[in-house]
Length: 245
Image (cartoon, rainbow, N blue to C red; front, side, top):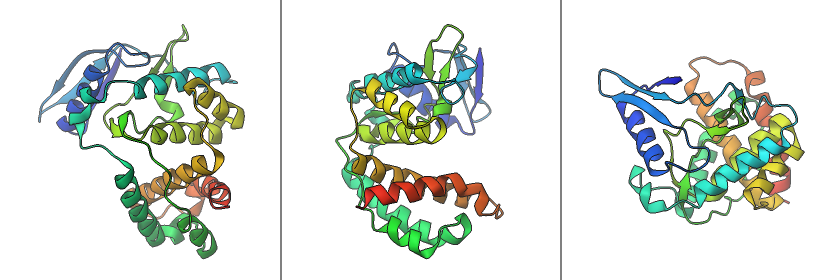
């Protein structure tokens, strides 16, 4: 069994609604019990396993299975999940992209981005976004959990909403590629059945990496030094070189 405790009852409600809307699809956690009140908010899930996509050796087959889970998710009926929020469409992405770049300018010194790199990053156009579909929004390698029988589950659905499918696909591709290398990232896209072009993929990576840096800089109460952000900044630099030819 897996016990998850929430910071607020709203998070339990959001996750429970998403799981109910997507029940029966591959990779969806199975909720056994739970409570969502002001006094206590928790869910008990069927044990998804102890391994993750980030920890599996090699991982090409597992990466393909992760891509297939995302593809099945995006093919789900959006009407079942639409009341989680208004969703994120192309206009939302454009507005949030501009806001993210302005906020990144505020923290660039703290996270180790010099003026030249920031200029390159800020010059990258917003990524192209398709119409919103059911999305996880945070499909990190750690969230793809595998049990001893090889069954894969995508956990942590409290931020599920409607979003461009490129959001999930690009974020999963970026983070898996950063941790496990380009072959694993390619395998994930093969499992999904769609290969994002290098320019569009890296425009999404610039956006995701900038969001991560802004979030971490705003959440940390003290300055941990630029080394704490080094990998994300390196990914940002590499993506900006490809995204803005």
